[in-house]
Amino acid sequence: MRLITALDIGTSKVVALVGEVDSYGDLHIIGIGETQSKGIDRGYVTRLDLAVNSVLGAIKEAQEMAGVKLATVVLGISGPTLKSQNEKDTVSISSQPVEIDYSHIERLIDRAVMRSREEGYEILSAVPRKFILDEQEGVIDPLGLLGSRISAEVHVAKVGASLLKNAEKVVLNSGMEIGGKFISPLASAEAVLTLEEKEEGVIAIDLGAGLTDFVVFSEGSVLVTGCIPMGGLNITKDIAHFMKVNSEQAERIKIENGYALVDVINEGDRIKIKPRGEEKEVTVSKKQLAEVIQIRLEEIMERLTELLNLHGVDLNTLHAGIVVTGGSAKLAGMKEFLERYFDLPVRVGYPMGVIGLKEKVQDPSYATSVGLIKLAHKNLAFDKKGMSQRAQERKSDNTLSLSGIMAKLRAFFKDIM
Ligand SMILES: Nc1ncnc2c1ncn2[C@@H]1O[C@H](COP(=O)(O)OP(=O)(O)OP(=O)(O)O)[C@@H](O)[C@H]1O
Ligand SMILES: [Mg+2]
Image (cartoon, rainbow, N blue to C red):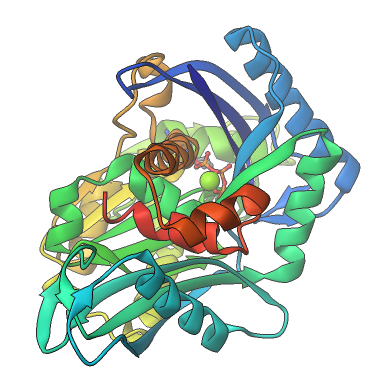
């Protein structure tokens, strides 16, 4: 029996999710703890004590439910500074074809990591994609094949060092150890995407409260990772501003009556609200409410489109379209809005692939935490299957550090298993 605890420190909530791996390798969710986020804003820590308290609350609740003492967590990281790049490189191995092993791939990863280093940033993952073995393109998994030269594009994702260090500090000050770190959008994608969608090309969008995380998969592996520092909270604030209500009322209005598209709402549909300074309730049109929402969503998607263009993503090649998850994916009309905006097929992504507490965790707002458990589980499975001697040796003293080779390999194996 092995326990994996995910910790997702979001803008609106902190989730601690406890998974247990059974003897068949299946993942059972046995505990969940959730608190309102305090002292956290879009991945940044704004007040250490409050942030630590939020984490402690979630851990305590998860512990009680699971009936175990938790000591180590797998942490999700995201924030406005999250960005990615792809580094192409070739490693010459020998004049005669030899069997490709991890050390060759490690070399490709190491070199990509070296080249992607940037002051003020920490590299969180490096995932090779698009292998070329000698002149053979389109190699999916080169391990065990013969070649004298190997090329790959390595997808490197990095995040601002201070954002990362402060998130880590919150966890450490909560008395927990960090057993692994993954980029939150990658975790969300892991929870909601199918293998076919990754193969066909897809954008996984996690629309949260403060962040819109995204990952583009093409030909089975990650092409772009990024984050836009806006989300459902901005919509709530807009509603509060335009309807002159407080944020609690605005949140309720959004959830109960909000819609992501203006032109499907009937002219005559109205809702009652009680604005500040008004004695009585007044009615406003639902169309107006939808307009406030749609304008903000369009702004977020414009930013996303800009980033995708910057990375040269051709939307027409993403045949599986868009999978949207995160709490804001529950906004009525979201699927229709995205279909219209991008002219691509869209589905809402519900976390899958775990057993236990299904009614609770099969909710888009748990995509990151479920995905973190799944990613960590894959890596454990790999640990058992074996790895190069060099990686094994390094692993012994570097298990917890994501800056070491294990980390790079970790990011790597998840896509070849
Ligand atoms: N039924 C609903 N309709 C519309 N919006 C919803 C609904 N349920 C939740 N939300 C919104 O989802 C957001 C919270 O999503 P989520 O829990 O994924 O965010 P988070 O992980 O805390 O934040 P982030 O990932 O952005 O840091 C809130 O803005 C909330 O208003
Ligand atoms: Mg989130």
